Structures are given as C-alpha cells and as structure tokens.
Image (cartoon, rainbow, N blue to C red; front, side, top):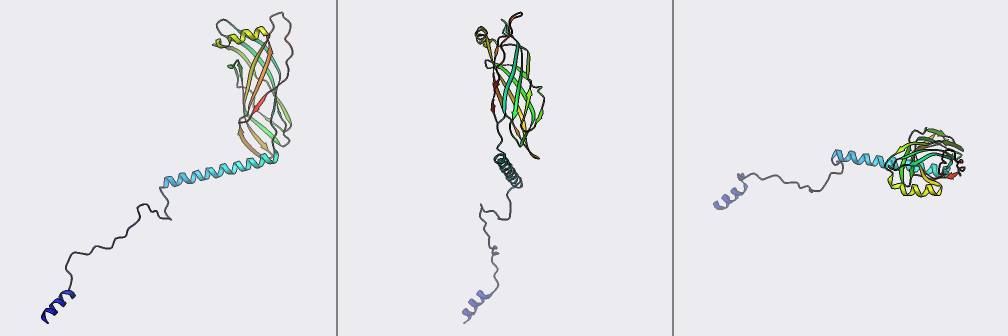
Length: 232
C-alpha cells in the first residue's frame, strides 16, 4: 500500500521540469494578406498606369465617335504656281538657287475646322535637301475653305557634288525636277471640341523648266500639280 501511495503521489505532485514552449503558429512563406497592398511605390505606379490606360481608351473612343459621325474628308493640296529664277551648280559643287511656290490647302469638310499650329517646307533635288523655309505663318482654316501659302527657297547650298550627273542631264533636257515637302502640326475643331495634335505631311512633285539665260525667251507656264497627303 505504501508503494502505491508513493507512486500516486509522484503523479499528482507539482512538475519541476523545463518550461513547456508555447504552441507555434505557422504562416505560408508566399502568402499575402488580402487587405494589405504590396510595396507602396509599386501600388502607386500600378494605379497611375491604370489611370493613364483609362484616359487613353476614353480619348480613343471619343475620337472614334467624332470620326464616325463627321467622317472628315482628306485635305486637298495643290501647287498652284512655281517660279524658278535661279538654279546653278558650279564646279565647286555649290548650288545657287531661288525657288518660290504658291501652294493651296483645301479643307473640304463642312463641320470641321483646322488649326495649323506649325508648318514648314523643305526643298529637295535628286534626294538631297538644299532649301528650308520654317517661317510660314500659322493660321486657322474654317470649313469649306482654301488657304494659299507661299514657301520660298533662296540662297546657296554647298557639297552637292553627288547631284552633278543629274543636274547636267536635266539641264540638257530642259527641265528640273524637285520634291517639296510640307510638315504640319494641326488640331481639328468640331463645334466646341478640339482634337489633336496631328502631323500630316504633304509631298509635292514639281517640274520646272530651266531658267532662261539673260535675254532669252520666258519659260513655259507652270502646270498645276496635286500633292500627296500622308496623315501621321
């Protein structure tokens, strides 16, 4: 009986062993709280990108609706007149030139007006640029309206030796061939809404007779030429 009591007392007495550690809670290494955002910087960038995307989509839809409703017609561009009073390439590959043009731009639309915020003209001969006119005036063009601009190229261009063969051949044939390119930056106005910017390019192929020598007969009259219009 004594042994039984001793054994029973050992089981019911106080425990003096090492402390029992608290139960551990485990969390998944890759898990994220649903109510906690990631890095604040990343969240800001993500929100900004979503906002920009929404704005672009909205503007695109607005522009598409306007385009479908009004269906703007393409601009009509013509070289109405051109005058070449000097075009001489000397032995040192220096070109002396004086070229002026009258170019009409027709807005055929009934409901769309156009702001020409910038327009520049570039003259090329045999693929080589020799003249530039960046002082063309900006203007507002109403619907069903035609505006005439007058780019002029005058001066001297050097290092055009690569065109010598073309120059000699065309001078002998009696006509020079030029490319005149216009680069514009415009906005469209529909009622009270302005849409833009757009950057159309006008490419004009110009054929002009060789300037007559002093005392020679005047050059033939210029033939009206249509230009290509490329929207960008």
